[in-house]
Length: 253
Ligand code: SF4
Ligand code: FES
Image (cartoon, rainbow, N blue to C red):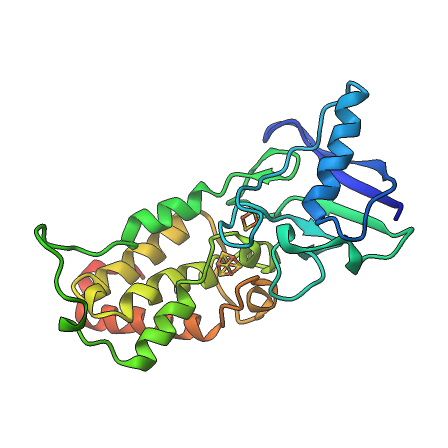
């Protein structure tokens, strides 16, 4: 198949970017979207041009490294599919495809399609941990976990920190990401000692990193390649209110 790509090219965060048009010719419909970009990059390199910078690692939909906008949709047109798992067969021969990085103040462009998602790391650092005693591990079944909680925690832990939820949100809110990360620990017995501080500190860090607030658009859930539900945002709100009632002196606003 032959395609026309309009790709956002930007040297760094301080320089202006622009769309540049490229032809992607003789692309197999079985190629993944990233393989298609690899082919385009090989051709650019052979012509002495700068290849298109994009992020990737596992290419199996599990690491969260990849991700950019394809025709205005985070990770492209397929639901619950990362860019690395998207294949060219979902496009038609002759299509024009617009490719650009996540757009959010909190995620400045590093180069072309790569953005700085380190604010996510700092939200995790603010509360995404548990306290454990050193020594031998306890037998697994000495800490019973209700099945419903285990399932909910596992679903929340599917978040791969890709940032699509932020890119999809008109407020560039990181609430779905933060809610998933708070919930997967707050639902487990091991997460209880820091439960209140976790939600307070992670929400405070989210605000500090210039993410917007949630106004219930729900675009995050639609864009999420792991199907994380906005129900986790409601769960975060409940945990936050509970912490606020317990430790009002720790909270701002
Ligand atoms: S909640 Fe979904 S869209 Fe947001 S960072 Fe996690 S996996 Fe990506
Ligand atoms: S490269 Fe790992 S999720 Fe896409």
